[in-house]
Each structure stands twice: as structure tokens, then as C-alpha cells.
Length: 461
Image 1 (cartoon, rainbow, N blue to C red):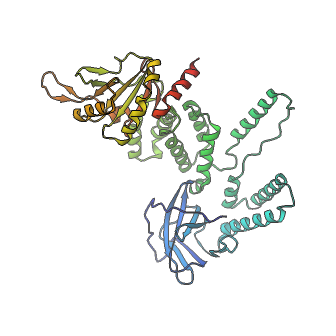
Image 2: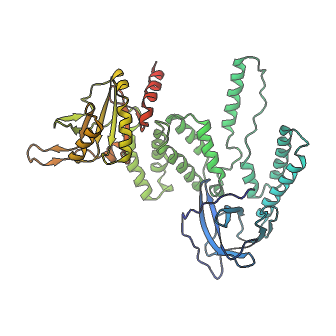
Image 3: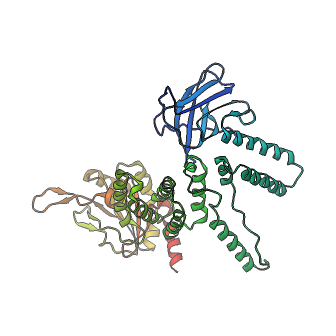
């Protein structure tokens, strides 16, 4: 195990209350460390760590983690010197260990913790086996032999959680292909067979109903890789694969974690249109399984669905009612063009000021394709709006602002909530609409609009 950089995330309360009769007590000694603080934290997926306790190291390197609340089981880490750490498996919570900063794994000695005794014995044994065979066997043979040792170790320690951790790092083994491969068609069939098998058995080595995996980095990494590399990045495919995965997860804590990880990935994903998967997951597993969530989470999810669902790819964009510089009504429906680029901006936004000239440079391309640009000013300030139009010379665009004069009272009225109706929580926001004002693209970087439209049109041929 290498010693890595550790970022302390103050995800929950920093200090645990010390108790007279603690629910957990872990005594440590680290040679080479003195008169400093160490932290005990558990993993929450691969990218976050939750601090559970802090302890003061004395002049001889000794310290004690203890607290009045039982520690949830899983893989924890001890952080020291601000940027180094090593792992501990937490099952029973009363044990001791000692090691040396010069060689944490090699010098680790554990007492009264079968999990950690086995964990560090495994690391030492694997290192020794690798060094013993290195240079004596070809790389492929070396990998095969190491895999055999690993599998035997897992079987011999099958009752320990650490065996599940090590098994989770294993890839599924693809069986031999039974047919001869002589042609390109045969090669395609071979690849299809291997891919299908690998995807079907991808999670075989992870116990998806053991909630201890939430407090390890392995589960999140497996989920991320599965959906990034093995799932077609389209809403329907993502939704179907998520449903298949969740169908086998009965443990509520694991189910909740997996739903959260997938849904949060696709709420604002960089692949256009995948937010449809977020809506599916939110409706089915948040709204549809309210027992897993608190009322605030469900309420916020309902609010988010209400914003995103009308803006999914293929939906007709909500009508926009604006006033143009001459004082006339400007609507989305009134624009006659093959495509419309809806550009929602804040005239005081620095990023909007950077993107507007990039959009303006594409006027020749837009004219050749009969593409209109509808620039909607989010801020209701006529002076700022008109100054922006003048400064960036966008008079040829369809410019509009949400300020309307009531004919009877003469007072200004506003029709549009840009955040709730067009999800304009950050500017600029770009939507690409077809001739019927259906959404075909959104949040496309301005300098990628041409590439997007060329790709879109190529798919329609």
C-alpha cells in the first residue's frame, strides 16, 4: 500500500465526545510521529472521507481514538502529517496497532483485530510473492500466479470482511470463446460475446447488499466505471441499466447510496440529454420510494423534476414572452428559422461577455443554415440590456428582455421566472431548438455549436 495525499473533508462534526466507557477504543503507536494530531475517518465512496475522531500523539508516538458512539463498519483511514494515511478495517472497535512512518505496511503489528491482522498479512504476503517471482516469469504468467494466490487467500479467509474487499478488486473472468475466429465477422462476434459477458458479470465480485461497502472506495469506483464505460450514454439505456442493477439491491442503505450516486451523476452530465435518466431515477426511486428519504429531500427532488422535465431533449421549449428593443412583443414561436439558438445571458456576467463574441463570429455559418439567435436578457434593466447590445454589436440577433408595460396601469410587469422555467441558475445558458422549437441540444459550449449541429444532421440522414 502506498502512502497517499489525504484531503480532510469536514463532512460531519469534527470532534467526537470522549466517554468514560467508550463505545470504541483504538490504541495506536506510530514510530517517527510525535506531538501532533492524527485523524480517524471512514471512506464515503472514493472521493470523500468522513472524520469520526481526532487524537493527540504524545512524544513517544502513542495515541488513542475513542468515542461514545459505535463506529459503523467499513474501511477507515488514519491520517497523519496532514498528507499521509493508511487504512484500517473497522469491525470490532477495541484493538491496538503499532507501525513506523518509514514503512507503514511492513512494520504494521495489530492485536485483537482479526480483520486487520489478515489485511496487513495479505499485503505483506502478496508483496513477498510478487518480489519472489518477479524476473523469473513472463508478465502474463506472473499475473496468473498472483491471481491464484489472491483467490486462494480469499477462500481461506471467506468469513472476514477483508476478503470481500480484496475480492471486490477482481475483474470478472471471461470464459474462452468456443468458436473459431477467422474473419472480421468472427472477430466482431468475439468482441460482442466478451463485452456482453463482462457487463453481465461486472458486479459479481461485489456484495451489493453489504452496506459496509458504502464506507469503502470500491463501490463508487465500480459504479462510475460501469456507467462510463459499459453503458450507452443515452437516457433510456442508462435508466434500464440502473433499474437492472437496483433490482438486485435489497439492503436499504446500499439502495439509497446507489440511487444517489447514479442520479447525481446524470442531473448535470456533460453528455447532452442524459438528464432524462435523472428524471427517471428521481421519479422512480426518490418519489416512488419515499421511505428511503427525508421529507426535505423529496420536496427538493420534486421541485427539481418540475424544472428539468419540461426541458428534456425532444420537448418543445416553454414559450418565452419578451419585449424587443422597439417595444414589440417577441416570442419563441414568432421566430421563423430552421434552428434557433436561445442564448440566456446576464449583461453583467463576465463569462457571458466572453461567450457572446464567440457566438457572434459564427454569423456566417448561422446565415447559411438559416439559424436564428434569440438573446434573452435575464436581468430586467433596460439600460444595461441596451448597452450590452451596443457594446457587442448584436443588433442583428433577436434581442429581448422580460419587461412588459401594462396597457391599463402603465406599470412594468414580468412574465418569466428564468431559473424555474429555463433552469438558468448560471449564465450563459444555451438551448438549440429545431424548426418546431423542440429542444435538440442544451448547455452546449458556444464554440461547439457547429460541431453539434453537424453531428445532429448526420444522424438524421
